[in-house]
Amino acid sequence: MKDEALRSHPSAEQNETIAPAFPGGSEAIVFSVNDYYCPYFSVMLYSVVEHASPLRQYDIIVLHRDITAENQRILGSMTAGRDNISLRFHNVSALIEGYTLYTGGKREFTVDTYLRLLIPYVLDEAYKKALYLDADMLALADVGSLLDTDLTGYLLASSRDMCGMASYYDPQDTRREYRDTVLRLISPDDYFIAGVLVLHLDAFRRAYTADDLLRLAASRDWLQHDQDVLNLLCNGGKAKLVHARWDVMKPYQPYLLPEPYRAELEESLRDPKIIHFGGNEKPWWNLLSPWMDIFWDTAVKTPYYKEIIYRILQHQDPDDKNNVMIARINNGEIWLRHMLQFNVAWLRFKVRQKLLKKHL
Image (cartoon, rainbow, N blue to C red; front, side):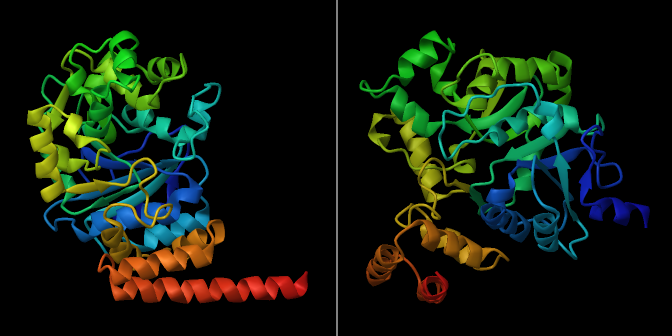
């Protein structure tokens, strides 16, 4: 009874560390999410649960500053009845007070991206490894297998930033100068993306405090935010590199990649384990984004799919978006059921608009 109560507990106090949800547990899967992002996170959460192995225990922790009790309840319902999956929420807003963390005014970045830096310090010392995953992803395989990565001698494991590497080799881009002169990377080709991180928690705790990491994060306007911070800390071979198929995005200029990495990219595109809807290539912003069909096929199974569609209609011209959807289904790029779901939401949106005008 005590273990069951622990697994269903919705949140923890900010000044507490989080103990393992399962007896003898030493591994966690961690996300950083804000309240507005919960509908999009639900798609990733569904895909993680869908591909979870019955032979593993999944201690899932969501770090946040503002997720409402209602959204915690809805997300929690997605793991109900799964004895080997725990989902908990931990508010860490007090831990970053007093630090000015740069986001650059970009809509795809918020202060919440820096919360991953707190993982070694908000997790109890019983935890030895943690897998951090971005919320704007979709899993096509069991992410728990990443926790089997041997981290001996490393601070973390991740995969190369293929998009950033293509920009690094673009003579028109300033990224080469930044990584060479500001980050001073010994091996620029080993710059990793922070969307998937397998963290060696004891190694981090021995080397740094939470204040060390937050002070460094707040020390300058980093081009790529906490990702630059982590690459700086791992400079000189402290990051173990896993295959790019664990964090797949399509670079804008893949032909700029050196041949070995171009081959790895092509392998990852043929056999992705995790799809990352990075930058502006998010299906809820751009209906022409890569893997849009896979996203919607999963989104319609979540409690939030109507909200996701409604937001598209609310912030974009619905007639234009409807035309885009029609064109895509005519081209065979998306499936009929997505079109039907979209049209139902579109009609409801139009009805709401008419009702609203009547009351004005």
